[in-house]
Amino acid sequence: MGAVAFEQREPNEQGAVGQGNGGPAAGGTIRSYAPGSGELLGEVPVMSPSEVLAVVERARKAQAAWGVLPVAERCERLLRLRDAIVDHAEDIVETITRECGKPRHEALTHEVTLIADFLTHYCRHAPQLLAPRPLDLHLLKHRKSYVHYAPRGVIGIISPWNYPFSIPMGDVVAALITGSAAVVKPSEVTPLTILKAKAIYNGTGLPEDLFGVVTGYGPTGQALIESGVHKVVFTGGVETGRRVAAACGARLVPCVMELGGKAPLIACADADLERTAHAIVYGGFSNAGQACISVERVYAHKDIYAKLLHRVKELTASLRIGDPSKDYVDVGAIIFPKQIEIAERHIEDALQKGAELVLGGQKRPGPGQFFEPTILANCTHEMTVMTQEIFGPIVPFARVSSEEEALSLANASHLGLNAYVFTKDRDRGCALAERIEAGSVVVNDVLINYGAIDTPFGGIKQSGFGRVHGDDALRDMAEARHVNYDRFSPPERDPLWFPYSAKSLGWLMRGFRLLFSGKGVVQRIGQIF
Ligand code: NAD
Image (cartoon, rainbow, N blue to C red; front, top):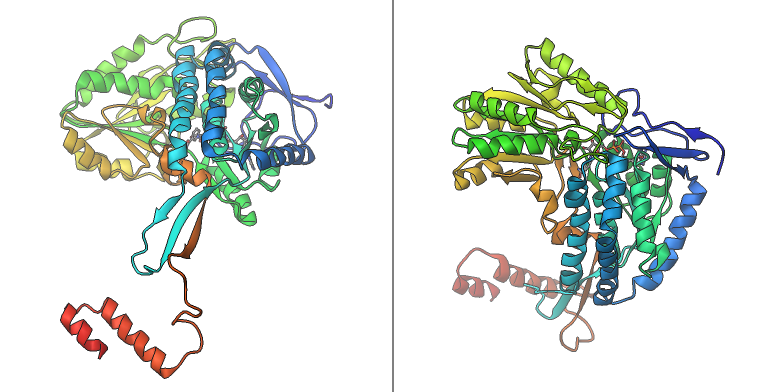
């Protein structure tokens, strides 16, 4: 590799999350630093388009042998990866905690457990889910059809830094189960975690080239899209997503877009105050608020607003902040300094426009990057903190007079990934949930749906399209292909085929009326003659 080393990544000039990152196209290395301590953890190469092509080519060759295996056999072999993940759980947790700066509890429960569960569940059920599916033909009774799920080839996976293990590995496992190969372009900020996963995978005896990793900045991701992969699963910011979707569109490569979120939490007048307060604190400050499904805005009914705010303040004040690789803390580090500047800008804007700073609002001294969990009150949609993705430890509160007002504000967003409703009336909660414009709405809980790997996950509006997790997404990772065949010995010539005549058209018209006329059976039969 070249001698040039690049300092820790800074997001681009706009400073918004997920804006993609330029960086050189090839040559040199990327250094990965621990956000909790500033310590240098390792260095990876910036891979060129030709290096990317070579990895994809090797994956393609490995896939040719893998894709012809029966699903059950692939699943049986993949359970070795589950066992290896369980055996190396501490090691993976340590890597995530250091490289991403999140507490070990979160690395274990939000990342490692999720993938062990994904493998366990889908290796058990995939043979049945991916079995050819017969279709009952309602009209063409002389023929039969079925859909079968063929491997696509090589799946390109481009992932962010905030869940550097569970996001890419969920997609890798789905690709491998469905008979494809997978090549991951991890975030330039957290490349070491996926390389740890790759090393563990290599120790299982599964075909090594079936799972490739290409490291680099945005241009390396672009090279992956252009390498001839058969599908792209992208997770990242909205603006990068636009560029990735355009690049996929130019090549007609199917893609899944998992983009930003601005999850609203509606606290109804009858919400359980204590549970709602704990949920807001956990949902807002887990992973230091750097989750696409973090609680990013609270709409609290006026009857409970003051009490809820007070309790959230009390609970937040007791959170311990610090380097999670050294101590048992609740809130870890902020991934890079720019993310702190974004948080500061949101707070400044909100305070200028009349918000009240209830708690926090300051960065903490290093080494490492830390920002106090922050609560803002009296927020409105005039403030960026209520309308743009924060991706940091800030929870803004707005007071509402009714559930209808909360609903209309929750839906006044260009994003629609996750949302939350808190009420003691479960039925009303579900009814309200159905009216919220989001891919997933959770009643009386937060973040939990991402861990329910058998439920569909993904956004609407500018939060993206396509789904990961769930049975449909697994099937969609494969290519649904249709086969149609004859039930009985077919005649030499079908009546619908050439030659056409006035007589045959007459019979076709009678048949058409018989089948589709809204008249009674007797009248329809009468029309034939
Ligand atoms: P990002 O958009 O900056 O980067 C994501 C990935 O895209 C990185 O690997 C990056 O190198 C790559 N990339 C950048 N430019 C590219 C290009 N032109 N072509 C191909 N690849 C390119 O996002 P981030 O800062 O790493 O992550 C934060 C964002 O991700 C937030 O907006 C968050 O909401 C979103 N996110 C969404 C989900 C979800 O499931 N919907 C999950 C986690 C994070």
